[in-house]
Length: 419
Image 1 (cartoon, rainbow, N blue to C red):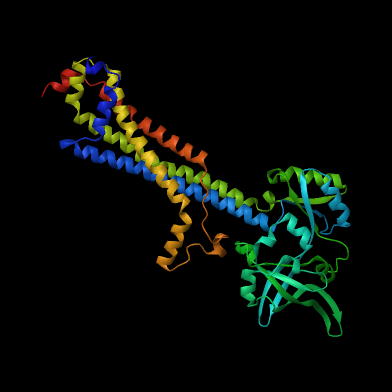
Image 2: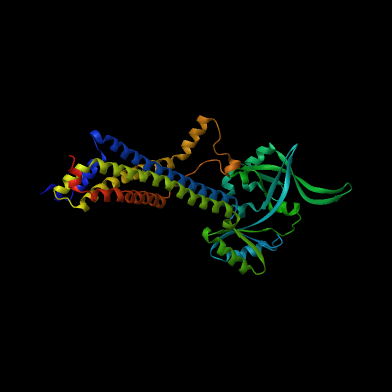
């Protein structure tokens, strides 16, 4: 069987040109650079998107550890007869649990150290059913909040700022005044620090404290009223729809919110950043892929005599085109697969690498008060990995079209004229 008529000769020749020798070693070097460029672009794209995915997932989990999927509250900030409202909300099969809360602001004081804080009055057992606060306790237990004991649980950063630990006491000062012989004075109460939690988000660890709802009601003079109900839903992604239907079923007018609305800016900014980063980093892959064009143009110029011989032996223009498209495709496939393996490996070990860099550099690369979380999580989304690889392969394939077409148009007589 004639070599030219063999169905495999395009592959054999194309692979041969990828690993050129002799005077063509520079072309082979350029091919290697093209592979490395594509691989690096794919790897960086996978790592960046994995980190963004991990950041979004971690942020969502930590937010939901401190807040519920949805909340229902009165328009004036007070909800009457919360027990009846809770029972009514639980009649909806999509609502798994509901817990009351009483929210207020205050100033925590320890000697000369003070800090503003958001004070949350909760029923410990019910609160644990809608949020994972109990799992975030560093010291103490959520159940130690008992009515009339005036205990308080502080975030780790807040306790550090006030320089208190479990067993110490702080004074809670609120803006609601009381009339005394000395005039109008702010209301204050001494609380015993019974626990410290750390959720890993500076916003909560630095500014939130929890007390029993009975103590909060007495301090803020709320009586039997609460600020609202927190809801835990079967499907948190249906929160906007479910919470509105629950509010309508309670009758009257209520203010409703959910985790997607309260932290919309966080998640929207992450999604926008992901899209922008994808486009920008895809340009790196595109630039690397366009190196394939220059590589193949050089190969075509270098292999003019070979092309003429193949044409003389009976190779069709389509066959010549296939040879050079195979060469470019091999460069793209090898670079893409190498980049995918490198990117996935880096993404799965990114936290270890960042910790090692912090030790070597002696600095905190992720300040919790700036980036909301103090570590760098990564979550590999295999669908995104597949999309990245397909984009890289597609760009590589497109880059081969012009040089391969130029090779297919080579005239044997012209190419051999001076040989």
